[in-house]
Length: 442
Ligand code: NAD
Ligand code: UGA
Image (tube, rainbow, N blue to C red):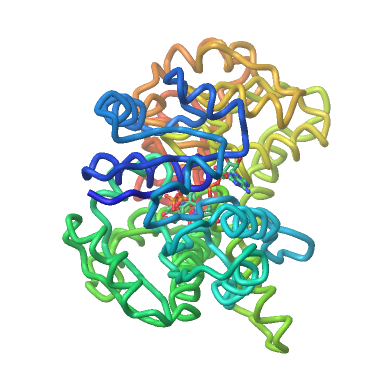
């Protein structure tokens, strides 16, 4: 059992802290957001993440997981401090490090014994050394510490499972003993551990996210070509994926990637390259293709409906992906904004993200079910692939809409079945799927 402190109780911090507690460690999770900590003490979680609530309750009850807003309390007797604060996009796509700086300064001010500081936030290459400098310059008196980079690779919606079953753990440090001490914490997870220097570890995180984003933009570009040439991108991806050098993962064409990480991390890596005099053409194209996917939904709706002024469009799904309430850089909200700008009324439904979405886009008319959202609508756009949308009663939907028009931004449904049912149906990259439809999917 080790004493661990986690700074920041967002998606990464709360999952990391809770999972380490579940592995038998004594964890104190700290946040500067008083409301979040008060709620956590009452068992109310700040985020929706499958399985997390039960895990928090179990570890709080077992006395292994504690919450506080006090750095003094959190750092008492701790051996490891995990920095898990946000690193949002700043001006020009540069990562905004103000929260990392504040956390590093607060750690330094309250440090009264040696400790290992582990950076889990996604930070630009060189930040580990910068954090060391901040701590050294802020400490009231010199105390030994080491900084280790340990980037996090979990996905929202499956965060607990991803944390407990990682493909690898990456540890970067100039202090071998500190990196090995952190490695001991991860040994129960039985995943390969990659030990490297701190800058390389920081780059592994950006390169991994940028590569996955590139795969998505690649298949989205292929989807556009498929639409024009009469091929089916779903079958193309399936056929490509059997090649072991390619694989099936992250080849789902759709409305583009969203979320708090891919968009910002591709931008941040682009920025890092540009400010060092390079021309990151591929990274720029990845972002450009991604932005177009959102506009493409609106273009399809315009194509089907004509002028969108005064039209009512139902949107199913507001979260940036399924199984989360996170709406940061959600493609669904980006599409909603475009449609609103063109004068449409948006009736929206999401199983868990409506409260967050309403804060971001107050113009949305929120509905309590997919059926309520589509009633009387001129068209419906399906933008988040929630399981609950897979088996909708399509006849009921068709009959309650003003016109049965659907843009399926996530390729959820069978095009021929939808058309047989009487929908004017457009999917992504499914110009033809062997059912005799023309290249534009009609
Ligand atoms: P988040 O915004 O959900 O949570 C960050 C938390 O840190 C907030 O609760 C905030 O109040 C708190 N905080 C801010 N400043 C603080 C300070 N000085 N002291 C204590 N607490 C402070 O962020 P997140 O989504 O968990 O992401 C955290 C980092 O991890 C980011 O760098 C992100 O890129 C990276 N990451 C995120 C994911 C993900 O799925 N969300 C996955 C891998 C990596
Ligand atoms: C992503 C990475 O998968 C994690 O490894 C990483 O830790 C995390 O970013 C991070 O750094 O924060 P996450 O954003 O939670 O995780 O979710 P993903 O499942 O990767 O989906 C990201 C976006 O891409 C979603 O909008 C999703 O719908 C979209 N996507 C994903 C596609 O459009 N097609 C795909 O084939 C896969």
